[in-house]
Image 1 (cartoon, one colour):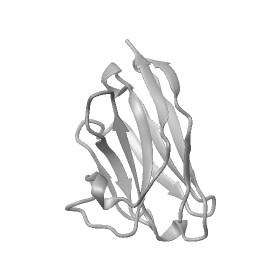
Image 2 (cartoon, helix red, strand yellow):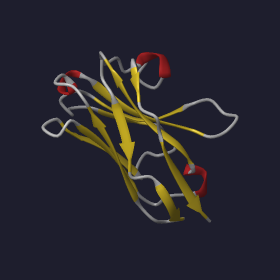
Image 3 (tube, helix red, strand yellow):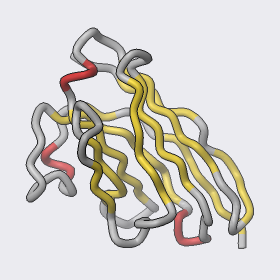
Length: 126
């Protein structure tokens, strides 16, 4: 069992930056693929970014490519999402998630992930 706790959300002006963190419990964090998703009311959860267990491969949604960066520190059991040049449409509840494998064809889908955090709210004012 893995517990994930997100932090770092908040209110920021358009064009600003935030860094989200997701702290994981357990000693097997370094074996998990980690992902970030986001959701707004009335919409499905949307893929944002993913990173392999050894950080060798990263994968981004087109909507955030070039603005967001996912990274991880396996020694600290933490995955990060650096968000720059934020836009009003980035406003959402952001979730981190852990998957037991990596498959480029499915890592953008919620069903690929086994464990989920509770989310942290990001609000971008225009």
